[in-house]
Length: 202
Image 1 (cartoon, rainbow, N blue to C red):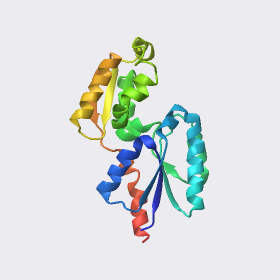
Image 2: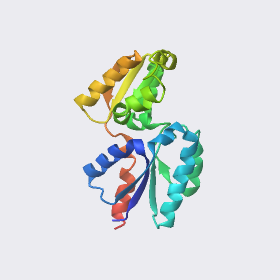
Image 3: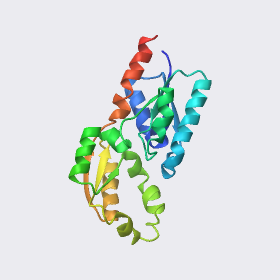
């Protein structure tokens, strides 16, 4: 089978590996960039471009980028279009997991929503409470999240422990809590055509 290299956000590594196992995609080669790039979205496009250039230099012909726009303001698309490389749909991974139409409806119904994924639930204490200073100064929660009304946990799997942690996260932010099961969304569906073509060519 012709290998497919996926350049991915490190925050999606666990989910992409799960999709790979579920489908038996042994010809999928996953290269993850640091999840911390989300704190510097202006650096994402350059990091992805460098990874793509390295892949091409190593002879990889079939490439996919497991990032949405992720705050690059179109910068990522400007890198990918000349290279004819596709990425995940939408502005960020929440839309990729949920589906563009479903996510747009949530935004219309309640724009004051803070979203969590499995990754963000696992790392909530570090990525949100610690890095925003809320851990040391709980009063900052109202400053950062005063305009939010709820936490919506987009679960990739049904996991009682993660669900409990997500509910705790909402309580720490003083927000209402809701959750829905999205599964892997476009992390699965967007890869299927490329993986099938890769199989047909062998």
